[in-house]
Length: 537
Image 1 (cartoon, rainbow, N blue to C red):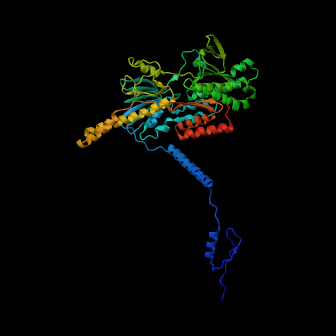
Image 2: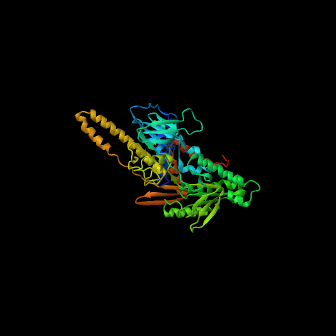
Image 3: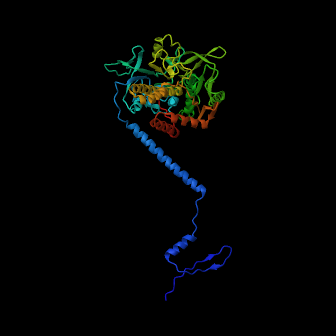
């Protein structure tokens, strides 16, 4: 007979060295089972499992972010079909395309109203990052959002007219608009009727009537202001490099003076310092050491809206950066090459300059002053329109005013204007719902009347505007920023490099579109890798 196959397994019993010989019939399946039962597979460690889970989460997050961003870009490029204006709906005319007006436009429901936008510029400008554009840190077009990018995504067509409103007739509910562009057609003036008027035209730069400011100073409020400052800055540097310049003339040309110690003035001085340290020292080594930055402020300290701790931190940082601060110093006159100032002790002095940036605050526009004159009994505050707690113009039920065009207890900031715009859009939605319920109530049966009456009572009461302060941020140079944030009953003051990272993330999240976020992030990356552009234009 054929011998039965034998499998010899050599094992050692635990604690002994005795060899065991096992003899039994075995097939390949039995062999495999025996082999698998005796082999040891390493069990993944806990840390290894966590690492794999983390990598998976990162991959899923990246895929989700890519898909979300891709869809947002596709949706932006493919606006939906829009219904035409409905003559049975009421018409809202919006003046301006700043923070207040744009926030209102984003949230207004065009199913309930016809909306018309009138603004001298056909875009929204993200002003908090405008100082970065003056030195090439960010391209100015990265901060611009065309108004039609917003209005074309509404359910109903929104008319946008690039024009300036020159007159408001509150009695007949009409406005006069004028085309002030360089290219004009046969029609350059028109009249528009409204049921409701939303005024968000902002304010002008405040000069306090000081002689020479408008002629020789540079403001920092609009796109062209940043472009003008950039051109003049590079002009001063190139002129100082011209052969044969006297040393005192070189010092004057390279002295950059900023008037105004608010966030705009401080951030511009900080951006200018970074431009000097990061780029001008490389490309203009013979001039970089001669460039000086001076900040002039009439109040006892810069950034009066921030806490004392952050003010001291900013001033000490500027001192380290060799930025000179003159507080309690008032500008009396601006001349072509120097400014006349009054020192804290009352004496007068002159400060020569090559570039003068004026960032001292706001004053009302001629359109606003003209409208105020038509309500002499209720519009008695010179700095802006007086509105009630629902942002209605005192003296008119059909006109609303927002942002810097108003005289309220709130600071003239982008944060306030944006919240007012969102609030007013909700008010108009509530008004439309109320009117619809009132119409339905007249036609309702007895059974439905009680239900609709309860709904009507809920929407009849419109809550007044309430401002929720989210904190204040300011960049102070050298990759440092300060933040004054509400925390419980008090405030949380923070400053330094970590706050700068928060400053960046906060502004990125507040940009109006994925397009703007992508462009700004790209600009920051280009600046880090390639440096700033030093060309004049």
